[in-house]
Length: 272
Image (cartoon, rainbow, N blue to C red; front, side, top):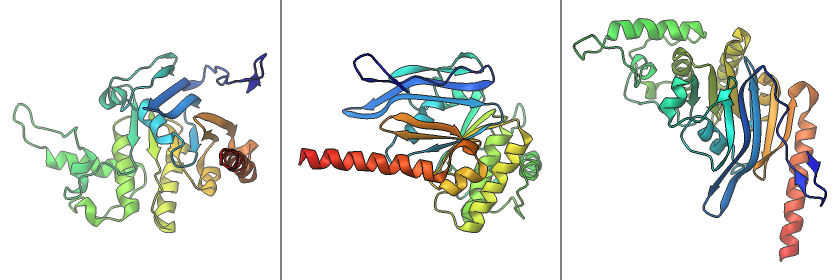
């Protein structure tokens, strides 16, 4: 961050790195009079896990939706593996190797595990449109085993499983789709300690393989420093901090957040 001659802040993006698989530069997004993203710059390397922090309404989910093709930005550009990237839809983003695990998981509760793992990409006999159920079960079991998730039976409806198991199924579905970049919107929301640990272990196993890059929306600083290589903090529609987790601390993050609250309170008191 630097200043212009008249003292205004000049927001610059991160220095370009040939190892970046995804670059988001100067992204802006408005919803009517509300500015969700003002000038956001994010970069991601192959195999890297980036923790995305910020208050509710800071724009984290909006950014994820833009990257995954669910929404279109008003301004700014994106690059994927060094080439311009402008997804026309979620399906288009998936075809480019970017997939998302949403907070609501997008699972069908009454369907069994193997059907949810292949939701929208069911295996069919050709030319007859019949499900290849046996093959789907076999491939579903292989996908779960590959990422170390044990679910005793695949015939159980997913709404009978624990929150951690459902989250694991959503992640397994994304991983088995051969995604290069996975976006996870609050993967540990509303989970107990045991279930949260299960998902953290799963993310760490994927991280150790080094093939998949991930962006995680998180709130708990302990989770950020446990699994993320780098952290980006969004405030007021811009990235206020972007550092490797080894070069920052919960105290530094707290100081930035507290200072923002202090400034907002002073503005509110002045307006009153």
